[in-house]
Length: 328
Ligand code: UDP
Image 1 (tube, rainbow, N blue to C red):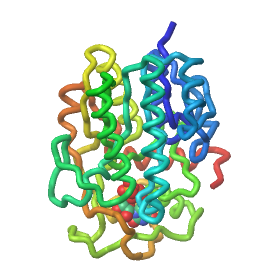
Image 2 (image 1 turned 180 degrees about the vertical axis):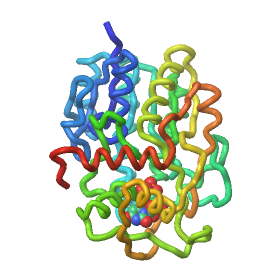
Image 3 (image 1 turned 120 degrees about the vertical axis):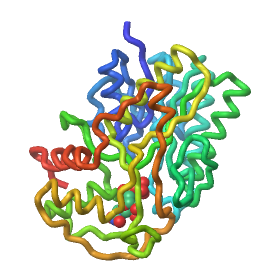
């Protein structure tokens, strides 16, 4: 009998790709999601439980019914701009939700936990390649809420033996190469899907958030990593937990930074269309530059990102954006 993994946020963008990778690796992913931002159509690789992390009883019931051997926790509010406008919601839902899940996990006798953290926990440390050892100084409530959960996990590891892997993602992009699942947010706020929508004429233009940053072309620099490569890392992290236990943090990125203008230029080439843009002001909470060093994930987990070139990510996202029957 295949082992089951509870995947919170399994109907979301990254969670659904992780479910596919888990299924391909021989596990049964049980997607647990409140569908506030996820889509039931994205649950294609295992059972679905509609539940809410703010409702401890719904977590207990899912764990009792499916008896997973580990929990992967993706479900969270994850928008920098929104977190600056409404920090209370981020502290309440992200931090309390994680606490409920961790306590329910331990109460069910499960001691393996994989957590989605973020490069937003680092804040603005321009010029530094960010690794697991870089001090974390978040500048937005989203990053602060994720850092609080990292600390929570460390506490529960010491007190209750909760073995965990924390992945700090950089900017996740692209879609499943088979286009079975993809990126679908409502409202969409992320650079690449918004840009592709503008190219396709589904939106008037992409607004560039700030051209006065201290970077060569004045726009923010980010490290983009393919969602399918990220999903593979989760399977490797899970195997590490199952084979050797203990707790470890890994940064996941491509190691290369691209400015907003560079991403726009690549998209124009790949789609063979100009990208309509409007110059806008800075978005509050945006650091200047985030670039990842992911040597640890490569050497310890054997992670080898295969699709994380910018062109591949844009091409996969473009195929998804043009899938038959899609209207936004
Ligand atoms: N960005 C932009 N216009 C948009 C959306 C994003 O210029 O409509 C910029 C944003 O300021 C950041 C980068 O694109 O520098 C990536 O933003 P995104 O929201 O995709 O991811 P985040 O960095 O917030 O995780």
